[in-house]
Image 1 (tube, rainbow, N blue to C red):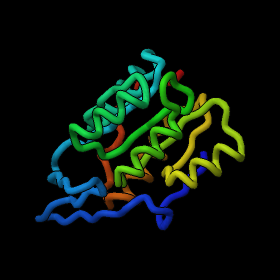
Image 2: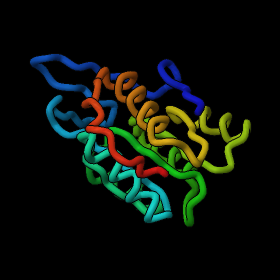
Image 3: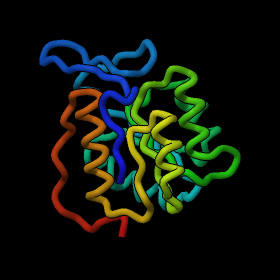
Image 4: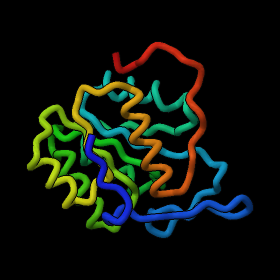
Amino acid sequence: MRRFGPGSGTGAGFASAFGRLELPISEREAMVGDPLSLLITDDDRDFRESLRSLFEPRGFQTILAGDGEEALVIVRRQPIHLLLVDMHMPRLSGLETIRRLKALDFRTPCILMSAGLDERLESDARAAEAFGVLRKPFRADVLTGVVRDAMRSCYNVVWPADPAPAADPMG
């Protein structure tokens, strides 16, 4: 996994025990206690559902999109705190989805997932201001670690502890 992290245009926020969490999404705020929303964008339905089963027990509200076009519609309708997006999808690639979101001033951290990861894709993802890139397949603990880093780095939020150990839905 390559993480591009703070200082690379991913936005920043802060948490206050008595105040609001200022989210790096255009003109939207959420209370600290509100569930964090995670948009999972992948054309593989089973993979989306696996990620849902991984993150919902950890306190995330998950929203699923089958491709980049659907993801663009969703982010215009509701606040999204984190985006997981596959690189290779019909209609719109994950990288192009991130580029279009950034052009809309979408400062939410985006993590690109790809089975075909190479130096050029990493460079393109960095230029598109992705928070990081993961090579598929990956273990659940690797993905949750990257998500945890994004939550801490971009929102200064430590999301809930992992639930009791269970079978790894990622295999």
